[in-house]
Each structure stands twice: as C-alpha cells, then as structure tokens.
Figure 1: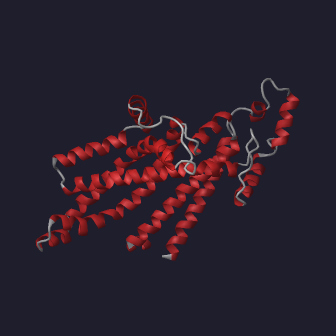
Figure 2 (figure 1 turned 60 degrees about the vertical axis):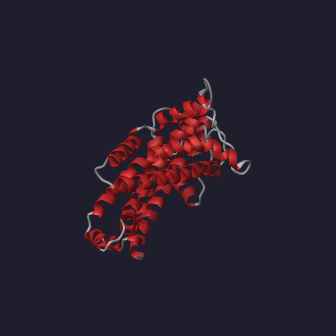
Figure 3 (figure 1 turned 45 degrees about the vertical axis):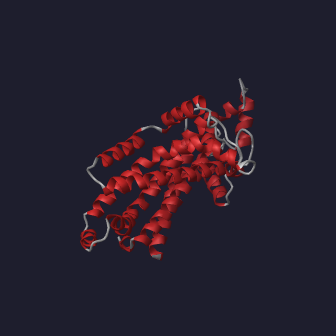
Length: 314
C-alpha cells in the first residue's frame, strides 16, 4: 500500500511540474507587449522600458520561470502586476468561496445521483429506468451557463425566492450566505449529477447479474435487503473513481458559474485577470486549481485501492 501511495504521489508531482511549464510559457508567450498595456494609454518608449525593468519583463523567459518556481516552492506566488497585491493572499481569500461552492455542489450532485442511479439500476428496462436515464442524459447535455440563466430567470426574477447576483460572507450571515449560493450550487450540482447517476445505474445492473446476488435471492431474502446489503455497497466502489472526475467538472464549472452569478471566488478572479493580462494571478490560480484536482484524484486513487485491494498490484 505504501508503494502504491508513493508511486501515485510521485506521478502527481510530475504532472504538476508539467502544468507549471505549460502554464508559464503559454501565458508569457502570448502575442502583445504586456509592459505597454500596463504603462497606460499612449505611453512613451521610456515609460514602457521603465515598466519592463521594474517588473523584470526584460529578463530571459527561462530565468523568470525558475524564479517563479523558486517562489512556488516557498509558497510565494509573486505580486499582481496591476495592484502589487500578494497573489497568495489574494487567492487565499477567493479560495474560501470556491471551496464552499464546490463542496456544496458535490453534496447536491451525490444526493441526487445515487438515489436516481440505484432506482434505475434496480429496475432496468422499466419506464422508471427510461425516465431516470433521460434525466441523467439531460444533466450531462445541458450546459451550466444555460441552466444558470434558466434558474435566474425563473427563481430570482419571476419568483424572487433567491438573489440573482453576489453573495454574503458566511461569517457575517450564514443563512444569507447559503440562500445566495442556492442557485449556483444547483447549477453546478444538476449538471454534474448526470454522469454519476449513469455510473451508479451501470454498476447496479452489472452487479445484479452476479451469482452471489442470485444466491441471496434463492435464500429467500427480500429484494430490498438484497439491493441494500449486497448490490448497493459493491456498486459504490466504481463510483469512487467517478468522484475525481466529477470534482474536475465541478471546479471547471465553478469558473463560469462564479462569473455569471458575480461570486467573488477564484473563477471570477481568473476571468478578470485574463481580461487585464495580470499573468502572476492567472499562473497562480491555474497552479492552485491543478494542485487541487491532482490532490483530489490522489485521494480517490488511495480510497479506491483501500476499497478494492486488487488495484494495488495492477
């Protein structure tokens, strides 16, 4: 088990290193002179050179990369080119909103997907199965920005049940905070639960055909006991693998969702920083998101190996 964890950890660190290379060079090789944009409207050549010298943009690209990596190792992501605010501190403030949104959206997705998948898998080929399958496919097919607009128009504009934009601090007013996040949470949760429900349904159908399930039925166990004790528990094992993918989808969906709902999270900060070409913030956010996704997938791999020992030796 320790060898498995070390191997997975090493591969995650290597992937993160590749992410830093791609992120840094792809951003800094974009066309356009960043110094002239920061210098203001119609700057002189001397002003542009002064900005380039102050920000270190005149140094070779590989030197700037190694300086940035050295700062990353020290947990220093640099300063914003526009405001000179510490990027690590800025991301830390925004991360709380994104983490809360992603965690609650995952709870909604799991709470919907598992019952839907279990009901569809327990009665394959019935109208219930077809209806739940259509629901799952719809959840996969509908873009989250479209669903966000529908929810805003119906629940915020027409009914006035929830605010359409912005949020309240969890510390200041927890109830107002949850109320302001209801629409973003269900936007991400509903678009993420479809593939998870299909995975649960497929695992249920496959396990229902196993010999030990037929043996349990032949012993006179009630169908409810067979499903809960023998089928459902084993069907959850492959679902653990899907959780890592779902977290990736949820994190990606939060970028668009936070922008639509004007939430002060990392997604909106990323879009705003791309618009004004604040490269240290963009690099820092991409790095943090990549590290989060890799850490979550590492936890999924470890939990899957714990649930199914055969995976440790594959």
